[in-house]
Image (cartoon, rainbow, N blue to C red; front, side):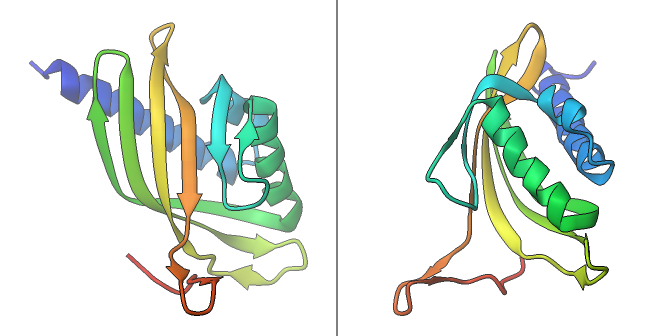
Length: 146
């Protein structure tokens, strides 16, 4: 028999599979179902925080405007679960073909997720995406790989 923690972890991993699929198919409705309505997102683009699922979906909508095809890769996903709260972190990369036909390899980012189990479904309630900072230049370092 699978332990409760392994079952919860499998359910969360399935949610991340759904994110990858929804991004690949550019399905905002499917993405909406994966975030809590009150999600707080510290995303890669300004402002400092995006509050609520509508703001989070606006970020993904912007991605869909720039990209003709989208692939989302998640590497080294690590999950810690509790009864109704979970924490995850990974490396993530958005790649694809831009709207003008140019392929782009994207960049690896660091991603951290806070999840809550709401109505028996694991939803992302917080995410934070970042790139390392070169302190001497004040610029993000976007050419690193995991």
